[in-house]
Length: 395
Image (cartoon, rainbow, N blue to C red):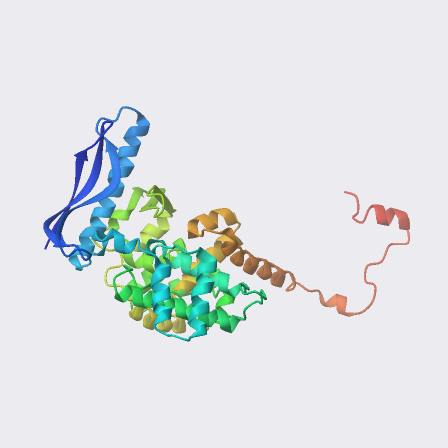
């Protein structure tokens, strides 16, 4: 089995670029040639002088190690797609149009592509596809946009159909190694119920945490998602090396896809406690987690807890967002934690919280108001004008 090592190479201006040294070499899926070096396109200072440069080196080396651990795992699973950058950066629109072209005369497929292009434009690389994006695209379709000459809004069932075509294309892209994960299987389909964003109330989440689940792995993964807002794909691929920090200041280190910047995702001590003792840095935190198994075990877990809801794993993410907003966390903070590109996506959860507040305000009712009389009377000794000016007695 090939071993992946993180190495440096001197470049200009007193810097060193980082690259992965894969030995023995592995085949590049694009060219078929054996490849040993994989450059990360990030650098460190050869002789850091300022505190800023030292901090830059520390963060960049940590990021490099994180990527190295991921690539080691990829190679162990014989996944060499990361070596073929041109394939991963190719245009998803072209692939979508090719899939539509396999169904000549299908207006439904043609319109599916048109609506997707209306959302992203004519150029959209595969590397930009993730669960958050798919969630935002579903919200775009559910907003009933009209892109034809008549600007006629689409119905929910039409949005369901267009999104299904999109998911089918994602599945095909995964089969052909354009995507590293099977987004088409992970991402939820659009149904009328999905517009309600099914979530758990705090007491339901507490009940679920107290209830036995046949799979400890599934239980940990679900509660972790509810406490962090992580999607299934984020949970499933999380490595021990990504969890850093110490008590009172734990965080998850990750690389922002567009800018290559190092980002920190803060997590609570209780979240880390949930995970238990840390393992091999190159290993997954939730080793062995499979989506089909999650679906099966989650259903039984909910039944054991007496929770009767159409609840999927993605519902834990909805739970995180809704409970955070209900507890008073800023919508901008929640939006950033969820990785939403557009705050309008996060506003869906804010509307849920607002509706819950309205519902709660209607729950306190006094039966005395059903008598039909004026129950608030003004004492005869108080001047009518005074009662209007001072509705409450003086201290």
